[in-house]
Amino acid sequence: MKMTKTILVVDDMESLRTMVKSYLSQEGFRVVTAAHGREALFVARNERPDLIILDLMMPELGGYDFISAYAREGDAPIIILTAKVEESDKVLGLELGADDYLTKPFSMRELTARVRAVLRRADRTPGGAPSALLRAGDLTLDRDRREVMVGSSAVELTPSEFDLLATFLSAPGRVFSRLELLDKLQGDAYEGYERTIDVHIRNLRTKIEPDPRNPRYIVTVYGIGYRLLAEPVTA
Image 1 (cartoon, rainbow, N blue to C red):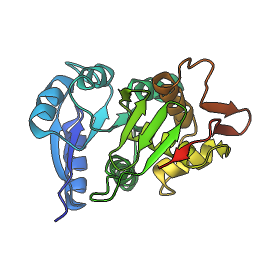
Image 2: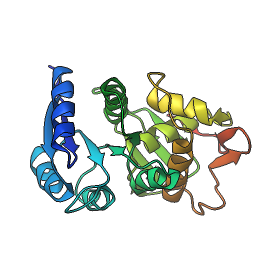
Image 3: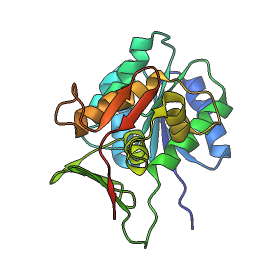
């Protein structure tokens, strides 16, 4: 039997929490809510959500501070809701570890599409089959276990970072445009934001590259996108 996914909605506007909870509940999700970041930490500890929808501007612990605090005790993917329109505000949320963002006002249909896309990325764990490994240099990626090793050290990646790395390791040497990578992460249900890819790539490099400023694995192809330099070995 398929387990119902639990979604935590965090926003200081009660009307928005009620609207999102009602819509997502009709879509088959179990929804819990919190009015600010401090309450959200308490709810997350008790409910263990599969995904968090998070406002940025809130009293008693805003969205940015919540992401930093939650990262020490949980790993559910996060979709940011923000009224901020500055690129730097959106990028900061992604750099802190969020998987996606939506700018207010937004449609419930688009929010639902993004929720499903992020959950698919976080839940690609087939059971019972032998592990499918991809390797390049010191990198080892296990697609079944959703694990990544750099040498003998485990590396914690967000669902988006994991899927980006798997995409590169599966096609060594191929150049991927930002739009292609965005489509692989989010599908074609909505128009994405290409800058999101640059942030995820930068975060990924800090976790897997010996020197992120001089990448050994994922290199920039100027004017086009990115490619993997090393040739992986598939097991």
